[in-house]
Amino acid sequence: MEQIRLEWGPGRETLTVSELTFRIRNLLGRTFSDVWISGEISGLKMAASGHAYFNLKDSGAQIRAACFRNTLRLLKFRPTEGMAALVRGRVDVYEPRGEYQLLVDWLEPQGAGALQAAFEQLKKRLEAEGLFDAGRKRPLPAFPRRIGIVTSRSGAVIRDMVNILRRRWPGAHVRLYPALVQGEGSVGGVVEGLEYFSRSGWADVVIVGRGGGSLEDLWTFNEEAVARAIVGCSAPVVSAVGHETDFTIADFVADLRAPTPSAAAELVVPSQADVLARIESGRRHLDRAMGLIVARKKAHLEGRGADRAEATVARRIGRASQRVDECEGRSIRAVAGGLRAAERRLAVLAGRLERASPRVRVAEAMRRWQGLRDRMGAVDPRVRIAALRGQVEAARQGGERAMGGRLAGWRLRWERAGARLETLSPVRILARGYAIVTVEGRVVRDSADAAVGGRVRVRLARGGLTARVEELE
Image 1 (cartoon, rainbow, N blue to C red):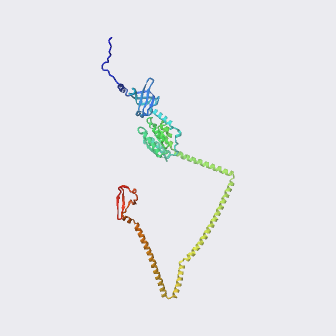
Image 2 (image 1 turned 45 degrees about the vertical axis):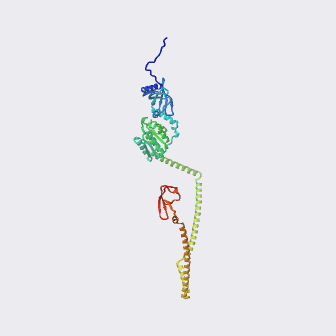
Image 3 (image 1 turned 135 degrees about the vertical axis):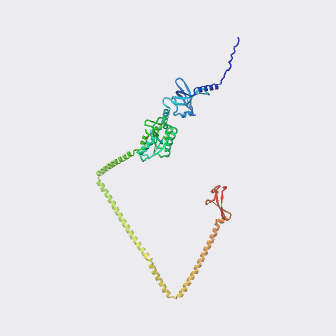
């Protein structure tokens, strides 16, 4: 029996697994480079890298999908398990496992819009943290002096609020922090305004808001950063966003939600006219109440014997008057005794003054001179004069001897002091080769008192010089 041989035809192509997977990947990538797919998210996993992996399925099939971190960061919401979503992306092959998958470029929930889903997610998360609790809300000051406003510089909102504040409470000081309230950069501007008033502590209350608009227009006040800035503000915050039917996350976390910006201006300050009217009404009520209290007290005193009380008061007044009279008598006696003592001292001083009078002293000197003249008449004047000359000469010689002795003692003390001064003189020390170094008039006793590169003054026995410090030892 003849044996049959099988042979492969010419041009056979053999592919590796990687080559086949690469061709499938290119084919799928060219064919399905931009597709929209609707389905339900299941098996959602959030990786530590920030990527999201899930299956997109319907009743008959499913496809693996990957939403990378950069795409996920642009979404206003986060995908959740079981969410019906509309996904845009491209089909790719994950070669290590030979699986095809959908790389997501955009994702939005079906049914509710993406913004509404993001709103509900953030609302639920912040409510779970307790940021909506009524117990956390702070009361507004009854009579605010300084009011901060974070809103757009232009537009009718700021004008309306300022007009209402000036009309209702003229004494308030209003400060505007201008910020974008819509579009790119608006979130950062509103957050900076709230942080400014919180950090400065200037405002008693802060109003943040804008006029009405669509959900997209109001979205700045649905951002988490704005909500947390409102919660962290040191002053109470009033949210005044949109119209009465508009609700934002800022309304839920603020200490007070105003239906409109104009209503916010009316809520933060009282009406001056109403306050004045309440004060006047209170004054009238107080007058009537005080009159009623006085009447009741009077009737009560009369009922319990006001006459006896009056007699008791009169007796107390009489005793007090008696004590006053006694004090007055003692005061008069004390003053009279002081006057008599002063009169006695005056008489003594007058006698001393009389004895010290120049007339008395001159008369006494005249009497003494007359006695000397009488005695001089009884003695020979020449003898008397000679005796006086001898006395004068003896006195002169004695004075010269005493003065000479004193001068000699002073000269000796002077010489000793000069010798000691000469011994202690810094000039004499300098003459032995020493010097005095000063910095800005201060004597340098330690090398640490000078600085390298600084100038010093050197005093020598003769003259001085200025030097620069090169090194400290």
